[in-house]
Length: 238
Image (cartoon, rainbow, N blue to C red; front, side, top):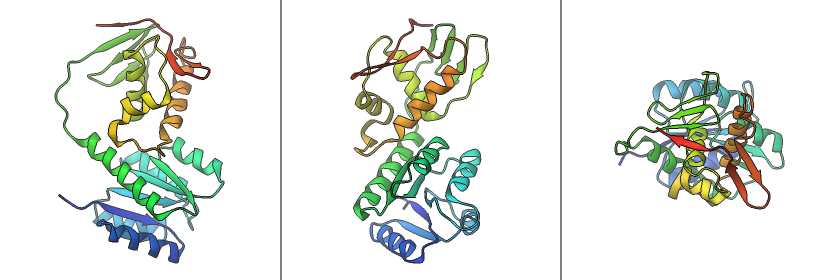
């Protein structure tokens, strides 16, 4: 099996050396970069399976780099933030980071998060058995599993990330049933979900916000106090 290559983008020389050495001992191939520019040069000559990005970088910061990568590529991203910087953490997840880790961090937790993200990536890239195409209709909306297209009541497509799409599928397949966070995590990420996997909370918030921007979308996914969330619409399937 090919060894995963991890890029560590960290301007602190000591931390960068410690993280690259730790990951190398765990069997990964690792490249260290001090700046976003160095990362770009590495990316030109090396396939990268995961990028660990520090938020505070000289020049282009980690959030800007994350946003730029998400606009062009699907490289999995683990953001590293200063302890207590909730704004950076939330923004990082909002713009597409797969997970975050606050400093100072436990080295074993770093390795565990890296492995969890890589497992999710490998699972997503595996060719799954062909599933019959399904089209769900609810409150004037349409969701086509073959084309992965969500259409609002006036016929406009709504762009969803892969994570948001899987969440919506979970809801429309279980309409009017309360789903808790653990169920959603299991159905959308499966065995690869870790106990520290918080990205689903941001994905759910982002999905609800996208739905609410369209007619009748605000009430599609309701919060059930103490229970979880529910798709309130009547769902039919073609």
